[in-house]
Image 1 (cartoon, rainbow, N blue to C red):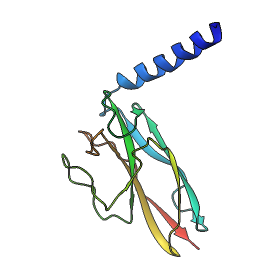
Image 2: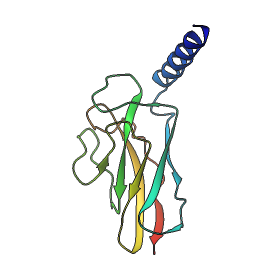
Image 3: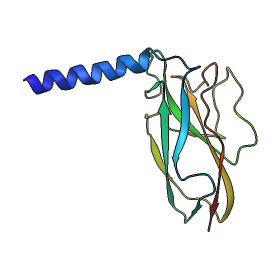
Image 4: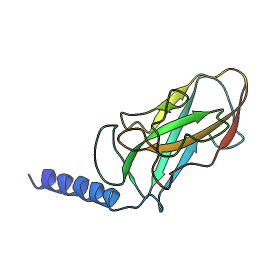
Length: 134
């Protein structure tokens, strides 16, 4: 019984920490692959987020969101508008995916979206990385 209470308290505390963050302090990042990596397709992409919490699409919880992955995008989605089909949505709150891309050089970048797939203000965006698929 004590263990259940401690686990529930720990989860509650972590959710509260994420809920008290501010998007201006948040940082999205790609854990792997690293910038400049040469990979074989398919390959795993692991997402990172600090200063905010991850929540599935549709969940209305302050200072949370879910990842969207831009592949070979020349620009970021329009602020204040729902992200469209030109990004990969991870509305289930996923923090990793497996991609299959053709051989060549590609760019990857994360942007966090709110419960309605709208970028936060200010946007929570990772650095754009470049990878080569062999």
